[in-house]
Length: 451
Image (cartoon, rainbow, N blue to C red; front, side, top):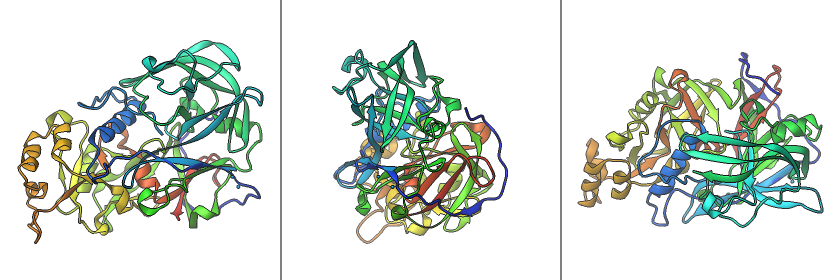
């Protein structure tokens, strides 16, 4: 088992290891946060935020968020399904996982999540009433461990029986892999996927089982001690190109060299974050901190003080959350804002931009303003006054400025660490490799430009 360590060292441009055959899984579909009208999908956005807070054991509860927040979500690669709601906004990625041996093999769809370390799929006792809406159930023909695992995630909860069985992803099989056959769950049942495969470090696995990828390494099944994600973007026509590469990097999905950033704590994939910049200028010292790189989160969560500092540099941006949302701070900004004002996140001295398409979660509406507790703003929008007037935005020729909801949300996940959770709104722009043994001997996360 890998243990939590602090690693120091220089960030370097790392060459990509070459592999004769890539083990990939495709992730071509994903659910979205905007409606077909282009307006923000408030319930989906709030449920996703609650799911992230649940995962990191936050005590925050979002008013109006569903109690059933979603569990959404070859070189050796596997395509990732990008669940997309018209027109073109992405929410969560997932792909196939095979469980069992040839005579009893079953296929489930799971979210591949670097922000957790357990595997769970629905067992035969987990019906729709128990939080498992789909018909696929594990046949429990593996080896029972005669114990159960129960995990409380904030307002979410899972419970199930522990099993070991053969698990295959992208043609790579981990034998005697431990996982949870669910008997009940709350807070994780509105996804198109069946379950979850955690790709964090074994040290945070609630079940105590070694993670799937660490088992692959121990069983000498991968060419390199790393895995890589490419997350597609519907708005760019790449929603069906999403993929997970096991033990490899797929050169058809990135360009240029990688910037390698050492992991500071081998539990989550946590790395140092230098600052957040807007138009090339650091938003302030408040934006320095630590970042967990999380493929299972759609948003970018920033410490509240950092979020205020970031949006102070975005022209005419303003907070839209009401008093009861003081723990989750949403922001809006003029939809016509030039892309140079979209924030970039700096790791290892290099600034990595968020794509303007990913920064925009949809047009601000009265209904969303009401969902986040801002009745005054909701009333103004319902009266036909554009939200840009709230912070003095100038009148344009065709009326008041139309505002959009931003992908960066203020939330104090771990105030003592100034901790960010960097999710898919950032990762769609950057091919990302999670490596267990970098040139300095410790784990790292590396970024290269996604194609």
